[in-house]
Image (cartoon, rainbow, N blue to C red; front, side, top):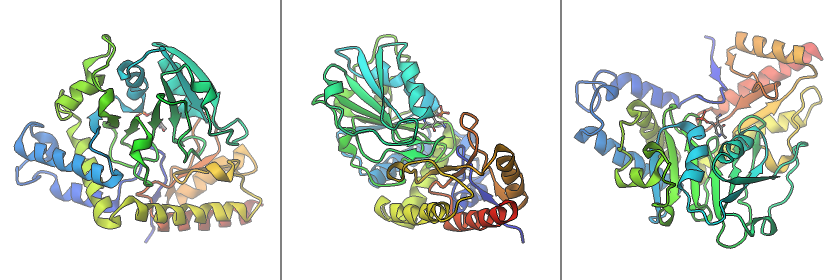
Amino acid sequence: MMKYYNYAAGPSALFPEVVEQIKSELGNWANTHSSVFEISHRGTEFMAFAKEMENTFRELLKVPDDYAVLFLQGGGRGAFDAVPLNLPLKHNRALYLTSGHWSRQPALEAAKYIEVRTAELVDKDYQPTKLDWTQETQDVDYVHFTANETVEGIENFTVPKVSPGVLIVADMSSDILSRPINVSDYDVIYAGAQKNIGCSGVTVYVVRRSLLGHANKFCPAILNWQIYADSDSLFNTPATFSWYTCGLTFKHLKDTFGNLENLEQVNIRKVNKLYDYLDSQDFYVNKVNPAVRSRMNVSFNTPSAELDAKFVKEAQEAGLYYLKGHKVIGGLRASTYNAVSEEAVDALVQFMKLFADKYK
Ligand code: PMP
């Protein structure tokens, strides 16, 4: 029987076990005789589920008590506004470290509210620049960086060093929960759900509690972290189905891997199969410096745009879906998020070998 694999960049694959559970609970979730998305978010069942969802997330990421975990709407892009609108500002200035497409977008958005400086954390040749930004951050309120560049396949594993008192904000939309982090190294972490967490419609924020309560007076209530912290994230009607998929995924991660240390080992082993193959041949090219190669998105090219297009078509015929690169850089991209199995990576490498032999 033909097998199908999903390498989509987001929304992307959920764990098959999670999808099966969703199917089995449709129409009667938690003995409510309704689907999870047909009932009140303020009912006992949903509120209990939401509490457990937050607790499991906290446990997995080891979130200290002095951090709030908030679930908002608006996606990653909503956070591009929420950050400058919520943080306490003295200088009205921030440094946005860029490393690719998704770190340049929040800088453009923040410039509506504050003075934005930018500097390259990874340059146009996919080389990391430096980690010590103490000098450049003497007179800024915060530094923003993007932990994983979903388009180019660049992952910034190390938190940049900044001047004392300067806040660190990280967009972890495409690598959250894929590896352990020390939450205390950050002041704000945010992530759209639709890659490693669940369905689109939820944005998770991890915010140092001492930073709450400073929102700009024009900050919309639906982006105001304090309001969400005060209401257990139930200020307005949440995307209940998306919350449900997040809660199921967190539980699945905990039950299957135990902790993020274990999961990280699986992710490293899995993606290295792909990088090892890429490094062993000269048909495909991956341009990213090995120090910042992403474990979540692997971008590569064949020798020509025509062959890239053929690759996408023939891969799909072989059951390998969504390998087209993002439109801003073209080429090919395989996403290897938590829910993408090792078997899927093996199948991809196998297909890549056959394709290279055919067109070399
Ligand atoms: N940040 C990163 C790293 C992303 O990959 C994306 C979307 N692919 C976004 C932000 C924007 O997220 P959204 O579409 O949820 O606004």
